[in-house]
Image (cartoon, rainbow, N blue to C red):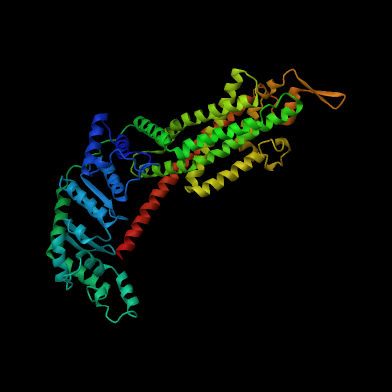
Length: 537
């Protein structure tokens, strides 16, 4: 899987850093060799996905980049499944010529291919024809034509050999010929063997088993088994610390270029904060201002968290990249989680400090440094926990639409039970108060903002007349507007709860990655095997 925010050279370089042990300059030389081998020099500094001024790489060049990723490992044998899939004839021929050039350097290339043009077919050294798992031929490409002639199925002069072989061993053509019988009387040009395909397959298989080519292959297999030899040893791989550092730096680079998911999201954060701040500005210090400031805190926390949904496509893409790298043993759950955490912290801190500063001073909170730092820390911890929760939902669905629906619904439910619209103690016991109000980020984040020392300090020493004979203090007014814990240590307890949520959701993400990804790999392998079997039939 290619990362569209990186250039071709960067993509290969990060692959080398993740896969190979050794020194920096050695890996860099491997990357340049892979670029040269796949003739990617003209595209080395082009973004794979392009941007607003340039187009993305064509499909043929993308396929060459994918192959170059594997060439970085300097393999002796390279297996490529359907290299020409979704490529036009020119791109397919160019890719095969490039691979033919690579094969001349000593690297053995093995392809699985369903169909090829005459030009591409002429580039193969050896071919193996399979049907239902049975070998119909294995040997030199030119010898295959003679094999079909010996079996009674010579290739017509004006027909491509690859088309002739496919029509002879693919049973789907029998159905096509049967469908065409009512359309035209002469169906001879639809089949080059003039025989039922099942009969042709049995004839070709019997002819091959009795041929000298089959005997030579069997003899070679026996000799190789008897010869034995030392087992191939792994060249090693990069250390865990190196891979964490590489993933962190790569994610930071992607964030700096993914303007759709990060910078527009950041601009929306600022616009939302400015809107809330200006709406709730100039609140004064009257009795009504207490309710206004509590409403401002609720709106700020709730909508900042809800707006985080805009980053879901980027999270889904990161998980898909990890799944691909995990299948090739280039990454692991721990490496991915730590790399993602370290790369997301700067962005979340940037969002926290900018939005908190704008909101804090527009709403007119008390000008005290310790309270401001606590407010910023509270926003940061809330975003950190929410980011981990979003990753869990993204991994479960892996579809943008389903993830957005799920997260929007959950966030709205959290707003309802956060204790602002209705005091937490007054919520119905089953479900709403426990467990929903206890697992909502909003409950702890909003209470932390209204804790003794933040909003209460705004009204210390003030009193408000209630009616004509009674007065209440500013602190009592704050408590009446929002259900706040009477303990003065509650503010640190709220932050601790948010921190534990951030840790807990990442532990859950680790468990899901460890088991869900491995299940997907097994399912993918099974589906590929089933698809190949179906094709051969």
